[in-house]
Image 1 (cartoon, rainbow, N blue to C red):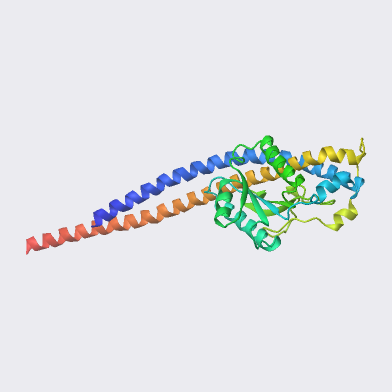
Image 2 (cartoon, rainbow, N blue to C red; image 1 turned 135 degrees about the vertical axis):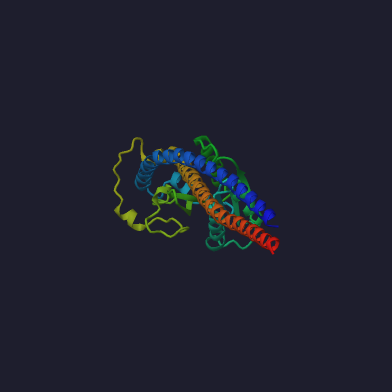
Length: 319
């Protein structure tokens, strides 16, 4: 019996060592992907802030009564009273609570802020397989799925999704569009946030994901503030006039805005997976130490028992 137990413990230790090798390899792969994702994100953030400044200057100079602005700042006449929620999750698991936190945030937003009580009032666009599967199980209608975008993210992918959203808003399929994604704070912290995408507000500091304020609670909705509007000063001179520029720039800026969201989500996914694999490797190490200690105790008990049997047998022969 002790020999069988010892053999079983050795097999368990070897299996855990094999798993530890896998988790360590996955951690290294995620760390390399995170570095590339961070580089792309940090290069995008200054550009995104500059675009945000230009857009806010255009909006303030053009005024709220411009037809081109009204076409994006309010639903079209006869639009359906349907809200679209874009949920950005990963395609795969093994990234801790990353997907679960995003799905919970989306579900809470749909129930509490959109007041979803009946089918037809909310639709979901899923970017990522995990979000699509979970939201379908919850009974939410998934309008469309874009799977695999974050794996090899390119601007063309964001452009394709953004064009689908802009066209749907222009045609009156949805009266509002919100995006649920993970804001990348650092390698250990990713905040699930909700950002308003359309309709466009004249002063909206959530235009780019880099505006999450310090001290905000995880999952809190990003909102603009009147203080930003009062203190805003335009530093730009536009040629041609602002209304004409708005008609050309708003769709492109919205595409860049969605691209920035996806860059944040991709960096957050790799960071979450790297952290999860690091913790899994550490847990495997601790479990190996515990099982090794048990294995040594069993081996010592076996040796002690055999010595006692030898001594007892020798005493019996002598008597």
